[in-house]
Amino acid sequence: MVVLNITVASYGVLVLFATMPAGHEAQNTVEVYAHVFMVSFLMDLLGEFEFTMVVGVLFARTDKRVSAVHVTILGALLNMTSFLHKTYIFFMVESFGVYMPQIAFTTLALAFVILRKNKFISLKDVERKEFYI
Image 1 (cartoon, rainbow, N blue to C red):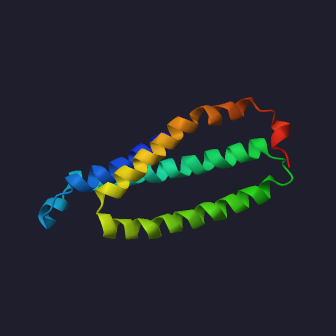
Image 2: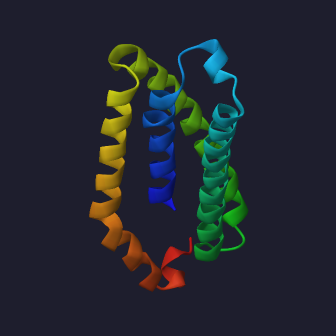
Image 3: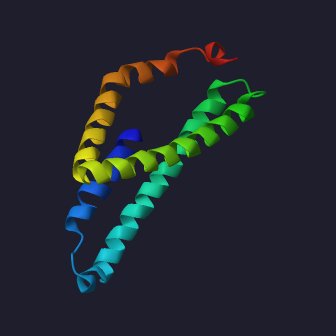
């Protein structure tokens, strides 16, 4: 899910911006609106799926008496990091343009996912009691 989210977000920046027509008349077409709508919808949908999966894993792995506190804190942290992400992305785009930061972040994120894949997969074999607080 994370790799799919990274791929769609990268597509949204690297392809959508690169293929956006320059003139006002060319931008106001059904094809452009449909393309932008579908990419935006898919990015939002994948974000919601990812959040739901994180919360589901959290509920499955933690003690039910304290998991509501974890979910509340997780939701607050995800909202805060989303805001901070937008803030520094604006700075990066102003400094380096649109494409270079997206390529760098995509490369780093995919490398992290690929390098840590076995560690993440091994967590499903850990006994649930080891996750309890």
